[in-house]
Length: 397
Ligand SMILES: Nc1ncnc2c1ncn2[C@@H]1O[C@H](COP(=O)(O)OP(=O)(O)O)[C@@H](O)[C@H]1O
Ligand SMILES: [Mg+2]
Image (tube, rainbow, N blue to C red; front, side, top):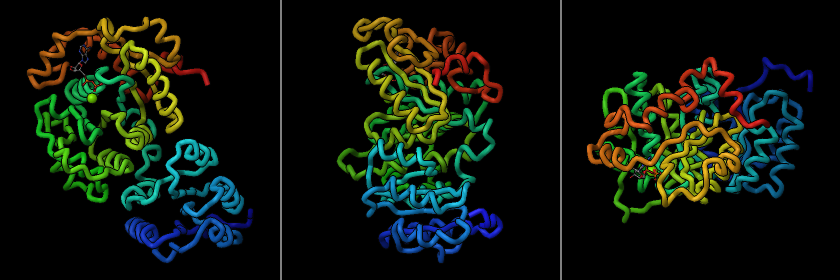
């Protein structure tokens, strides 16, 4: 295979096993400026036969939906691909374990069918991948905040951080309430939530700049919130892969994205984590909090091994929630605890009734002071020269 010449490599070849997928691929590759003639009907066997004796195109897409042993098939494919080939796989198995094993083989991405053309285009287009764009800057651009226990303060922390990014750092920031049904970020800030998030996740193909412009509610000229408060009687199915499309579409328009990630849907959770550059798990000192902090950390590390991960302990001192000590929590969780925030119902209720973010309402409260003190660790705002402190906090591999 060493005689295969890089110069002769085509940009793309794709194989699909049904008409809808084929059309989706054609649509996506046309949008990327590549010829539709390189999209064929066929399984991995056909891909192997096709690629055996020619220079491998730079990107190869295969459809694993009829494959009895996807891993073996992908290995077979790997044997005929030149080094550096970017392989994307489509499949119907929504199985995290399989996903990891496929990624471990070096596959660029595994996407569930039916796949949205926008997501496919974003996946195939190297320019849209966070990792490909100016590494150092992307290092801190997308912060995902996820809660390990209901009411632990995920939305409060996400909103506070987004507000501080916008108002203290002057960054154009988007706060995405990714729970399409019960997201509260917009509501808490007294903003019109509309139905944008649920629409985006029901049909990711409609996410374009016009949609974004109409859908985002402006808290100020630097903080924009995307939420939704749909009629619950219109419960059309959402597509969790829409989260990735949405994030990739929004990322170029903003300096920072803060994701308020729900636990209501594992697909959304994984989609959001997969796009994030850092994740903050918000927990209280409850038994379920400690359990789910560990589970969420394991998920985040599996979905995206390079992301920076830390824990925010919140509502410490609330008697109903304090079931274990901070020391026990730290020992069990074994991940960096970046901030410990006290229970402070008066301040929280004040901010909620004023319809503003906590740091706007009470800039000197304990929560805001701690967030400020731990700012770099929490947000990576100085990620360009990450301090040794942060490195030390990371789990030893
Ligand atoms: N440190 C805190 N002290 C007291 N109440 C808090 C604190 N953090 C959050 N809350 C309150 O707890 C409730 C749930 O918070 P929220 O941020 O919506 O949690 P989640 O998004 O995890 O469900 C809200 O009423 C919020 O004001
Ligand atoms: Mg919430």
